[in-house]
Image 1 (cartoon, rainbow over the protein chains, first blue to last red):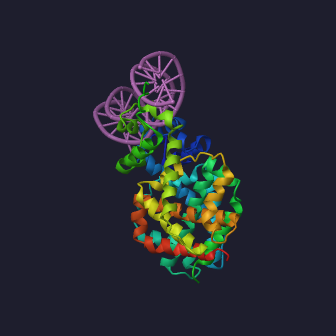
Image 2: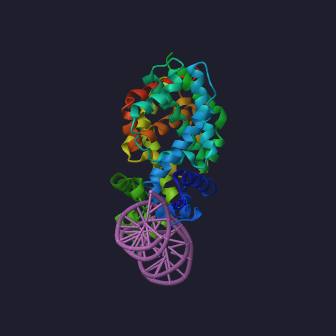
Image 3: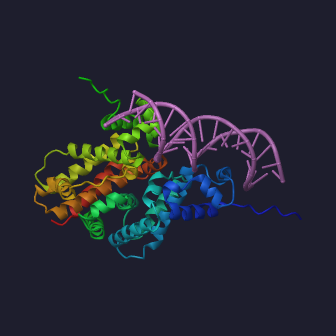
Length: 185
Length: 185
DNA sequence: ACCTGAACACCGTTCAAGT
DNA sequence: ACCTGAACACCGTTCAAGT
């Protein structure tokens, strides 16, 4: 009974290492070569587990969004859910260095079962009474708002610059509240 | 009377060429070396006119925002102005290839006179009755929303993916309207 | 003041070949 | 199935030197 040697690498270890690297050196320092080195492997080995760098970034983005989703506590009204989701996104984007840029640069891989995916994205809002189309539309707006906001906050000089003119926490909260309040009942 | 030779380059020609390059090859193809080649100059020459690549991208971002500002027709109510501004941003982001990524990657250069800058950013809304702090906060929210939305739309697979679940134009319009409607009167 | 030449220290990706 | 070695075709940036 011969054992095949345990693979040195798998997709999850790859992604975990990429997040660690991102934390240490930021997106500009996150190269395939250095990532491979951290994993004790040659750079081309990564391409067995991932299509290319944009694909890897897309997988990281997916994880960031998943973290946000998991941060939302149960709610009993869809407006409250959207508020909590917006705040969770902001926290998730703040948790990972350069998160907004990772999400912007990452390529999402088309899911095979798109209908099922749409359903699961809309699910928490549908459960609270929204129809699926409205649920997707509202969620897309909240994500856009939080993602755009994170882009500003992540830009160092822009941050310092705006920091003297407005309060980030209060203005985010005000914008999110306005957005959610404005959705037709 | 000796004439000094006309410089081969200046900041404006550099930025114009960068936009042309961006259009042809996208952000991933916009390298300092190819940009220099297009201008008939060696790469290090660019560093006389611009601090580094992030600085160049920041200047491009500034131009994109300026285009949006110029697209807003005069309005007589601040809500209408914000709506028109949001639509103008969307158009500006759609006009330049990878505009959202350029804006996210560009480093804004701190202005010397920050107070004056804040004043001019808030001016159109202050003229319509908002105080400066509210004006900046509202404008930041609209920019965040439009920028985040553009990030989704610019992501090819993400676009195709979402395109089967929602209507981009309608959902952007609905989100923008909700945001502006939700701001306290 | 403005630009070149040459160099430094890297990149992402492909692909034949190994195990 | 999973990884290495070697190579291809590039990068951004610095800096002495030229004009």
